[in-house]
Length: 308
Image (cartoon, rainbow, N blue to C red; front, side, top):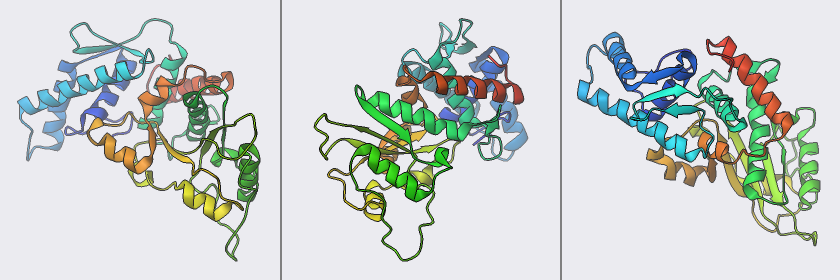
């Protein structure tokens, strides 16, 4: 998996090449299938001289990358920040003033392709923790009217795990607070739980839709798909069981390939990739939007992209 400002492998899959095309377009204002084909040919010569893919195969991969871009444009529902040429073989920067969804897409693109272990803080904003805030608001938007959400995980570093669980129970009106069923003190920071979203009924009674979500920036998400287990979390840390087991949500900044979408969804629960997040970010708060805009501009400037 390439990290910007590096280049992808000559044998990179279509979703990875699509990310590179978007970043190159952001930097150069346009990128064509011909230019990408030439780049892959050069990478073949430099890196794979012992087994160069045939030119026909290279053309096929490039075409699939641009088909992936077409799919993203449709999936983002007016949130795709680039313009596809009339022949479908070029991508160019959108010269109009970017809307909020365009800005969020670019943030997610960088949060995928930067090294989010060592290069996540820009303009004094932690881009990975910001992703949790964005995911919380997207989850609330997805559940619709009267839904509530908050960040449980690492964005709330000032609180102990006990305090976080007590706060969770108070907000959702169930669970009766923190409990530790072992003799040793808990070593958890968040139990892999990053965001919580729910819908109360006016009667205030237990038994409501609750969802627990985990968030991942970067490209190494596979090992995390099954880490969050709401039933186990509740059994371990809540005094009383919830009436309904929370739904699992998984948020990832990457635009995931469709070739293994079903299996990833089975492992992760309700899966939100980059395009699904953009699809439901119409009403992101001003506070989060300002952070997204500031972080993205600073990260773009620091990594050879324009700040726009």
